[in-house]
Image (cartoon, rainbow, N blue to C red):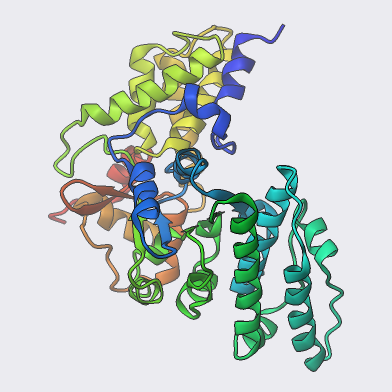
Length: 417
């Protein structure tokens, strides 16, 4: 028999987003109706709308996309590409994203018992090989090979220079035409227009994301609705204006972190109730109702910063502390020990440049991130790693991760110093 600590530990897996089957029992409703808003935008649009979804890591974007898929599965033909697990995040280009999603569409049809003609995939590979031969590159591609890659790592073997060569006329129009043929075939065979969900692009490194989203219009051109996730730092940079131009007329949505305190420091009970509901549903699924004492849960929620994944990590640490102390619940002592462990992991490795920026944000709770004397890559990194958190409360503002509060209070100069 699995003990209660193991059951709860497994119920709070920070690396496992909710699957569609879990939505009925584990999904906690937000005040921000991102999933329904995106679904309505796709339904009501006359054109093949492209949706760009952003939000900090761990904010729940994948879960909201699962909700969109569930809401639209009877009206569209969803094809889901998880870029993080299927492509190489460190060597990715827009062409691999588009072809990878096209192949995923075929694979999804195959899994549903739908037989499709793969001639369009063959024509895509022929176009790629024509360009690679000009560059004296040898890439062995065919429709069967592409479909084989759909169940493992999808990698065409194209570097950025080759991808740029293909992203010119007439080759790019040829590939887009063949992708359009594939989309049309799915619609003709199933009666539903494909809906592409491309998750994981928010984890691409900042400079790579600029190339993919801001330096080419390729991702905006397939003739079906598509949802892309984009890095939070890119969406809060001047370069995002270029992205919005590329995706002109389409939908840019942001999933903010859950608000637990206003900018003035007032407690937001709705935010705490959301997390209490989320935790209660997971504990119920683990047959461990009441495993976390109320005071302990409030402490863990407060130090999560309103980030779903951060709370899940904190609960896991609390489980380990409770097991170490041989008590079958997380009490306040275990919760505080979990918070302290989490803080030590965050503090480790902070240098003076990063600490300077964090001190500014900790003291001021600014509406715009400081830029003077701070490198862009440092701001981007601290947002990606959740040292800096973003909130919306009648306007946008930033604060440091609350688990760092005691540390920064001791390290940062007072305002009048």
